Length: 71
Length: 499
Image (tube, rainbow over all chains, first blue to last red; front, side, top):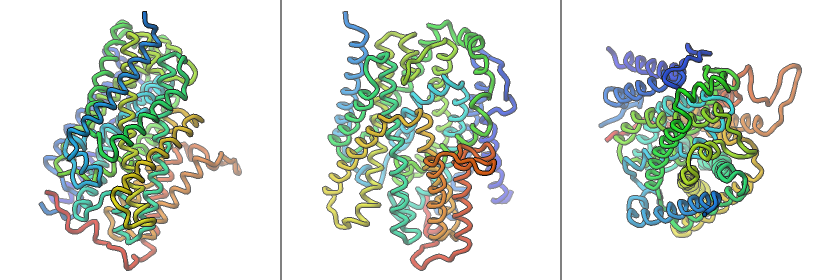
């Protein structure tokens, strides 16, 4: 894959991470699981996933989009 | 038998004095690191960067404002703050923070104003950025004093008046800065941060146990506040969630004490490490803090006028000393993070305003004294303003974040687009600030069916429209003008080194 194409993939990934941190599809849902609203569980899980993806980004794609950076 | 009031005041007073003493001792033991750092130093270590940034979360906005809002409007505030701080801010941490770190390292910048002033060859731009930053820092420092005042009212059930709490934290803030001087107590931020993180979880456990467990608590919510369990509704529209999260995230990136850290990190590794940890750290702090406010609503806690819900809830469900300890810990954490804000603010004042315009050859000692006096005056003025209580904690904080957010897009455009011109920067920054200030201070006007200067346009917050305006003006005016000869267009794109 070309460098630009991978760039766009990362941009799209970040956009999804932002967009679904709030579970819009559960809007108005009041189901409760283990004492907490279901939508809160989604959020907590999503944040853990976000941390994992961010970690992957630091390993695989750091320096992307910064212009020419010499190491 | 000691009265409850005696225990409360004893715990709060002793904790604050001990925190101050530890701060001073810590400074003496670790002077070299901290000294470098605050004397516009060249390097700060891994842990300090992560935790001074984390410390910004440890403000009255989180500890008291957040639970208050969750108490009144429901727990969705967890989502707003989560997407804001955990995801959006983390991404800005890379886009703004890492880029600034690379640029700052190549050219030796220490403040945002200095970086922009050099790139665009303009002392006036430098001063403008510093001036706007100091202006919006004012309400945020005031917020800490309001939070402390309201917390003391809640803890003592009104026996100690609001002004006394606000005055108390002001005195401690000034004492920190004047006694410790212009040197960091950054690692007391760390200690207090960890302490508070622990105590908040302890409070959640304690309240949950005392009230019969999480299931009993959610049943109480279902009975008393059924709308709180459903996602959305009331205050929380999609527009509110998105606008608030976006403006706060961009605002945080422009906060002096955060933005300055982007320049002074010792290595890029620290930025990397903190980036991945951020979402988890955010959830660990926000979920318990705002759940407490939510549960209080289900339990039918009644909060006296002008108090925070958190101390009231803790007084009801945990021993007096524990409630006092949480309030004292929160106040100490707020105090030391306000201290970081004030110190960064004072470096903007001396480096970007005083030196370039008033006295270029001022000695370091003179500058240090001036900064201390500046901090004392600033904190006193915010204290006086806090007595008028211009809004709730979240409203005041949100206004400050929104003001900072107006600068974020012009800065990002400048960092990534070499064709940005000085005129474009002035247009973007001045135009959006004028728009934003008008909406904060001018009362709404009805004009032919449409409302001008209201809270929203087409249901979206004016702060978001201001940000859009700032980007359009910066890009549009830059496209129409040519760079002045003093501008250094390649400043942000050439000679960047990551090691």
